[in-house]
Length: 376
Image 1 (cartoon, rainbow, N blue to C red):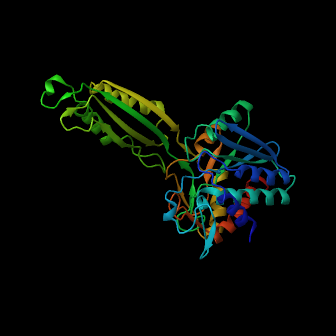
Image 2 (cartoon, rainbow, N blue to C red; image 1 turned 60 degrees about the horizontal axis):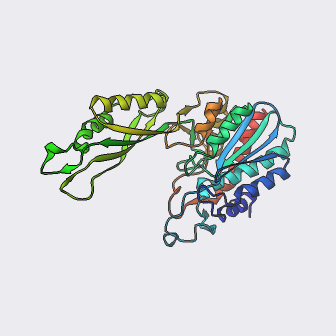
Image 3 (cartoon, rainbow, N blue to C red; image 1 turned 90 degrees about the vertical axis):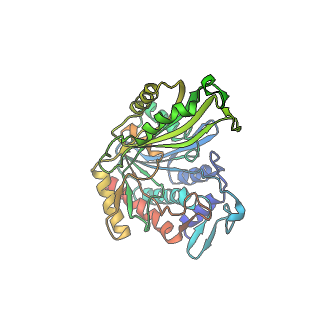
């Protein structure tokens, strides 16, 4: 059994449902310390974070990942226990196999190989892991990034191991992500009897025109390879459950996924201007999940493109699609960020899996990226 397959199985067997780490980072820290890495454990609240580095000075290349996983859901729906890794027909099954314990294991093996082959390599290679990527993302990389900023730590390049490939390992290179901004809107009315609307104020009726305006608005026409900004309502709730009562308040949840045309504070101001223009009596709470980031053409993209073309047989698609990732907290430190990982078809699903052949090629892919960026 290959080293990367064995380590991935070990990590999957640890039920690290967010924000639990379940000992994954301790296993990794022990291996990297043995390879000569300086290791630092950064725990905030219930979240474990691991910072490991080798070398000194710049340029600094960071490998970024997470050891937490989403809940498995009904275990009876799985063909095998989600936390008992099993290989069937060339596929490794288990929660986190693709997202992203396979990439994390490949990072570790690649780092061990790289420093063994280049013990006096130029610059610094580092690994940052968190157990808070699939959850609130408050005490994970967001918090560690604040620590790094306060310490004056420099990061030039960041490779995130999120599962980015579509059909074949290396067929997609993620070069940016949209920002995410969430809102909890409460519109206040006056509760009353539906037969006496003149004595009440229906917050649903009042809010609908404003919500329709927000959802129909064309916020922009996109930005380079980014799609246009989108506002989506995800939940609407009002009423007592009775059909003869006008509700006294309306609760609405919505989210904006936005490109670099915008900053979060600009979108907040635009949305609230619409709410005020419609005369709503409202309260709104915003959660800034992360600003968009984009890596323009340069050394990182050029090297990654060439390496992925070698591994997949053709140049990768270069995309800013998908949701978001922890790289959104590293990019503001001045780092150029890309994402490279295994095929993402089964992530967060029942019977999550990764191709064993892809898993066993990942360490060489990551090690080649390190060599081309730091040693050539």
